[in-house]
Amino acid sequence: MNNRMGEISIGINDFRHMAELFGNFDENIKIIEDSFNVKIIARNNELKIQGREEDIRRTEKLVKNLLEMVARGEKLNPQSISYSIGLVMAGKEQKIKDLVNDILCITHKGKQIKSKTLGQKKYVEAMKRNDIVFSIGPAGTGKTYLAIAMAVRAMKNREISRIILTRPAVEAGEKLGFLPGDLQDKVDPYLRPLYDALYDILGGETYIKYKERGVIEVAPLAYMRGRTLDDSYIILDEAQNTTPEQMKMFLTRMGFGSKIVVTGDITQIDLPTGKHSGLIEVTRILKDIRGLEFVYLTDEDVVRHNIVQKIILAYEKYSRENGGDKRRD
Image (cartoon, rainbow, N blue to C red; front, side, top):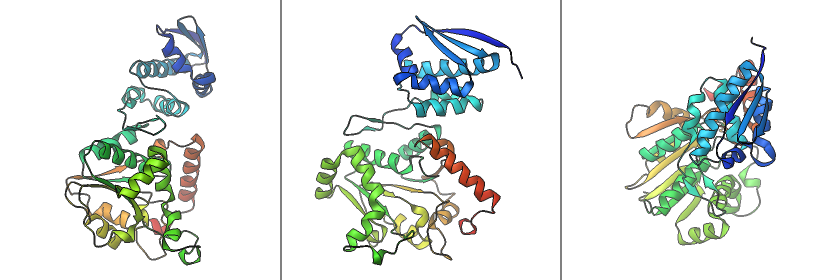
């Protein structure tokens, strides 16, 4: 290992690029310094990197790629910095520039929604070119949120006339019959993550307006039976909790001018013992059909708090060491 100490300088002509690189209260630079064990100092229009030569070289690769992203209009944040550091650590720094992505839509608060990882970018591109997409991956990878963002984008572009979001109402520790209220009150908790994403993107007032007009529908999967859904963007969430029969029923609801996105995490199946997951089965049945695509996201695509990625990895390690869950075949 090379322990020689050194220093290099990187010229930055635009002060705005320097400010974007450093982030609020230098939060981005602190993450880079801690990750590579270097010291980064800004002097006039130069950035000085001090540390071991090997660490300096990796930091230089990262910084130059990040500056190229900034020059192309990309905004940096701690999450994108951490993800880019992971690419450098894996020797994939050339892929950092691929993180510059189109804006999918803008939330009611003016926030730009973009794919944030290479896996998410692949997922978004799959939704653009296919009528049916299956997105399989762990919690926090943006499966549902990006699907809803694409649905809102399609609606605003008048590509579809309505958005339909659905989930199987599978009990995970609670019995529906013991929950208070009428049927809608009982199933609403299962649909809450879908409401949350819609509120975040559209705002509560706009969502209610669209719901009253029938432009947006959020309902349990059982409500889909017997329907043909034309000109719709249809999202099935938590699909790992469908049975094979429910999955077939859902997919055959698709009408003309519609798109379907199915999301799920096959490591979090809440079906009763003896029941098989329709999501696992469909990966075997439909793998050779053209016009649909399976996208697999991993812990590298987690875009929640950094600790969520560590939690997912810890659970995966525990599962491997203890033989895994036989129900997850």
